[in-house]
Length: 227
Ligand code: SAM
Image 1 (cartoon, rainbow, N blue to C red):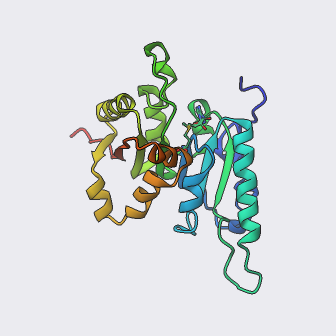
Image 2 (cartoon, rainbow, N blue to C red):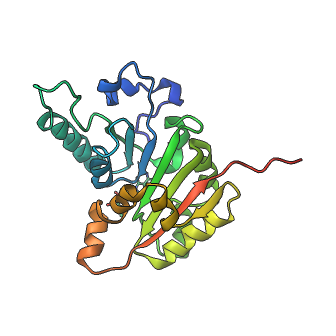
């Protein structure tokens, strides 16, 4: 249950300085959110590539989120370069233990995210469990709220049925538009896509087992105005 979890009542109550002390005074909030980040592979590979972008992982399992927190703390220490004036890497990455299906808007202000990642989410195979899936019409309204117009939802899975499910729900939602991998690469987002495919622990496992990977990306669009 969520009783042991500590949630901010609203994003204003969150003190991001605790998560990103090196960015204190910048007024920055996270722009990338990795939902169900697991062991943190995506964030750890993206952090040095986008050193000025704050990134947050959300993970519901206690031990796993603690592991990621320790991993980030260790990286911040061991990567520190005292002789250099440059801020040490990994200052821009952090994690919260949270149920992302319940409390996303408590963490992220409206239109604050430029990227939302759903990488190899739990498939919940049985139909009666489909409501537990992380992509659903109700949740898509929340994702549209926290994503800035132009922001991207990245989904990838090795389960074809889940891929079709996520794709069809996103296609049916008026505030999202499908965007091809080629288009994203042309827009300079190739490094992100490469990390989506290969950087996570689950993605590596699928690779070892020779499984397929199904990618689907969607852009948050502006609603069409009535004239
Ligand atoms: N994205 C990671 C990767 O690619 O390696 C982890 C994939 S793993 C199959 C799915 C993760 O989502 C698990 O770590 C699980 O604990 C987490 N998770 C499931 N439901 C969640 C929720 N409602 N909120 C946050 N995390 C959740």
